[in-house]
Image (cartoon, rainbow, N blue to C red):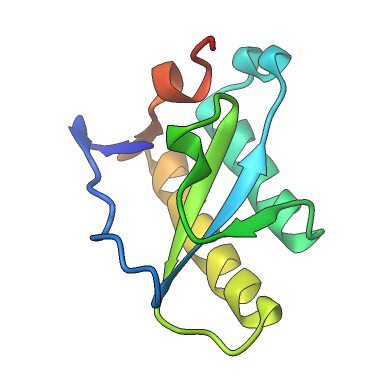
Length: 111
């Protein structure tokens, strides 16, 4: 879903017992937003709990979705969301610095 310095950031190996994904959904009109605005939306959606939590990345299956991988076992939903928020803030900062960008062709692909 993300590129760093032009190279795809590899997702951690799938582990059904120790990985959660926090999924954020967008509209087709969000295509007009730049990557930083999209990442601000990601952080806001996590903070306001307008997300879904699954055991797999939905961005591979559904267009208009960014999935944030939350590795490790967590005791509850709040722990998952707190970790996802930290990871999303980190990615937002990297986008702001220009070292990370969103795979827009994956995010905004047509079905």
